[in-house]
Amino acid sequence: MKVVAGNSNQPLAQAIAAYLQTPLTKANVRRFADMEVFVEILENVRGEDVFVVQSTSYPANDHLMELLIIIDALRRASARRITAVLPYFGYARQDRKAGPRTPISAKLVANLITRAGADRVLTLDLHAGQIQGFFDIPTDNLFSAPALVRDIQDHIPLDNIAVISPDVGGVVRARAVAKRVDASLAIVDKRRERPGESEVMNVIGDVQGKTCILVDDIVDSGGTLVNAADALIEQGAKDVYAYITHGVLSGGAVSRIAGSNLKELVLTDSILPTEAVRLARNIRCISVASLIGEAIARTSEEKSVSSLFD
Image (cartoon, rainbow, N blue to C red; front, top):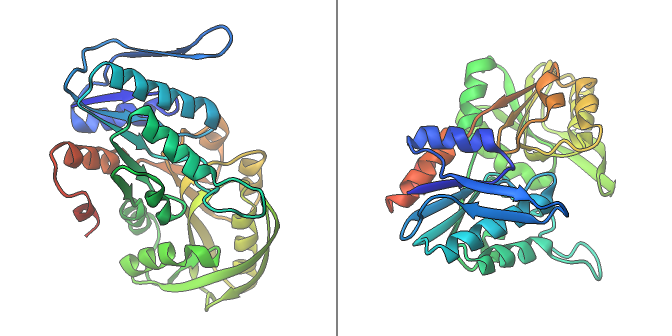
């Protein structure tokens, strides 16, 4: 087994390799003067089971091209099987035609990864589970819930808590966490007027005097989380925490969250934290390296991956 890393999240790739007790395969992934991507695999991978760790996070197009070219280099170097490990799958929010004459970009990206030569895909908390069907190759969608639940149990008293979905679409994800920590469930009903902005309307469920835990897969501008926290406090919530898998945090999201009613935002390291995130007073990161590492080990050994979440 070989593990190759692109430039999107080297610390996570190194932590995964450490879990697997396998050093990262030496590779040169760099830019020419005109910013074209160049890849050279510096070790023999002929006949190997190779896992390419690369989040397609900001800058999404650069990291996507790195992934495609790494896969192509490995295929031409006669790797036996290539698995694209995508801790964060960019373009996942473009999973349907949101209006006339608009693309389904998640399907296009799935086609690109498949045509580049990937044999399998391993990803974490897809924005929509049905994106697995966009790939014509085996796809495993891991869930961060076990890691999030462990952190909740370690850091938050569980005697009077409620798990909150920030929108109707995230109810299934929030219910899974609520079940594991034996908490009640509530929903924030919101109306999105335009992309990147949201307006909270009301809270469905009882949050009076409770410690509320918002659970979602992606935080981008932070508007939804901040508005949801405000609505929960208005409804009598004691404290509001947020547990989110992918911290995209574009624009002024970090400062927006730092000045909000959120007591703490907990992210996974599926996306490399920026310096602003590391310095923020109320943002903390937990690692999913062991979760992804164990899934890679089981895939390589042809063992069950779904049993990780039983």
